[in-house]
Image (spheres, rainbow, N blue to C red):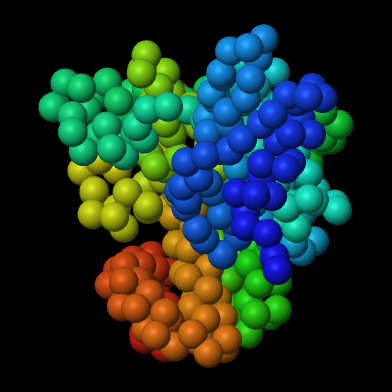
Length: 337
């Protein structure tokens, strides 16, 4: 019989403490579940010099595949090095990649007690909202201002179009590998128009910098979580954030974030529309791939429920893409099945 996750976690936690110290895990609670990972919060109880101690941690488990191992290594690398550079991220307690005692690669990290920016914004009055937007944007621009060398010390000089070429080639590879041929006209458009968005300087991009991935502790300090980072163009993060906010029904907040971003950087963001096409295409491809995987595995009821939730956002994304590119694209119903 396979051991429960809590039993496996308790056994592993005992290996992290001195011999003779009894460790017990409790209050295991799943916080998130997506195709790439599962996230749980748990309490670690142990005796220290006759006193009962309790600490709360988060464990993120990845698929037991080469891609899952790579994601775990990348997240650990980001957390460890950004923490060392005094950028606000959770600290890392333990990492296991190969021969994991939990049967999957995982990272155990500090739990940041508090609420997400998404929750704080929903409760904020206008003055507090402006403060939160400024803090949120400052965390993004601070990250981009650190320079790529924090995570990739040996990064060499690149041509101004190298990063956008990689983005487009990645999308083409996904379309061909996962039979997403309906997206190739968008990929072709991105390739044909890439010369207008050269990158002056590569930076660390988070790749999902949204209010739900920034946690405010009780003292009001923001911590950034969920690192699928890549060295890229800062406009990718900004465009992803703006599109995510609009997609979730917060266009006014998206406008505030863009306004604050341009105020902080001191210049209008050039080429942003191109990056909005790029991230909209990537988001749609990801959703389509996920739903088709569910349908292919026989999870029709799960596919149908998810498709209904994604249908209107996908229609909105397609309308935006057609308006920006002039292309006539398949319907959302076609792309999501």
